[in-house]
Image 1 (cartoon, rainbow, N blue to C red):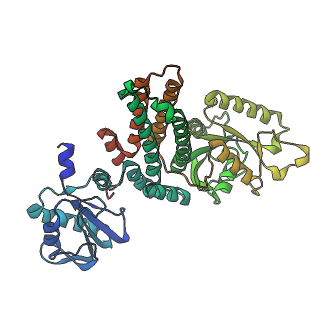
Image 2: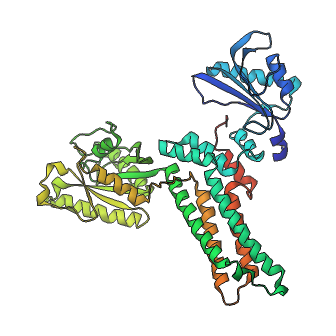
Length: 465
């Protein structure tokens, strides 16, 4: 079936999450649903009013009683006719309602089919109810793991990110107009670009793109969170640190070396930033087969981390064997990670040593996982290391493709600036760089987007959206 034909089919799905709940919703969307709604419910519905009635099966017996809402096109979420049935949220009840919709459709709406993942929101995009950045923000709002992430996703859903992109586009279009005018009317010998301060406009536009990119970069961090792995030799307090950061006893803590044999993962938040913190097995040579597997998994997590907390034990600084092991582990971390993954040295068990007798290196963080001393400094250091900055004006919930698009805009504008500053500007090449920059901006909101990208984006939504 072609994409155009598929988008023309009416669709139906359970729009609420799987499992039991107080309320569940079955949603239908398509063109010309009035006859279907009448056949299903036995009456006409007034637009955008709540109707309390029975949802009957083929024999007239009630499946459930609930609420029906009717949204005629184009004033609906998808821009098509939309019928929503709100019933009690039991899985069996909702499946019966879904089956009844498909049963009734055989006679009055034969092309009705089950919706694919993200298809309701995809139709909202195709019918100009949302642009692509707003559509993606729907999924981001559902998936938000912190209040800050939810507020940022809501900001993007309301159109704040799109408005910023449109502002850049309008300034870029105006600049393109000046360049095209110079190309089209060279005989007039009017220096359009000089009189209109094209160079100044281009410089201002570059600064605006940089500002939007900063906010989008922070939003991307907020959306994905960062993965932080706690690593070190056995018994340095890795599990205690995880428990202290999480505020719960997640990992078993004993004085026996090798207690942690597998990774323990917990998501926490610092200033609204999600952190996926992973406790790992102590890194050492071991003859224990199970412990060796845990150590191998620890290294796998370390190599995939956004940051590593290299935990040291202050109480064993006079132990030559321990210090040699720490030095060897430090070299191995540097060799495996290089500069791609930042490693933060953390000196634990400050509560058990005389602070006047020993001082941590300038770049280290001293703390006590037992008492919580120094934890605020560690949290601040983590945010600084990954580049998180709270912005008074808020951030845009963004994805990697948005960052790549804005980076492409930057690259094209930089090349355009070089061409414009040349003694004899190649205006045709300048015009092309500006055109390419506009195309990259359009990809963010979906003005210029390949169909295969749309399929990838919406396939990751839940069925009911």
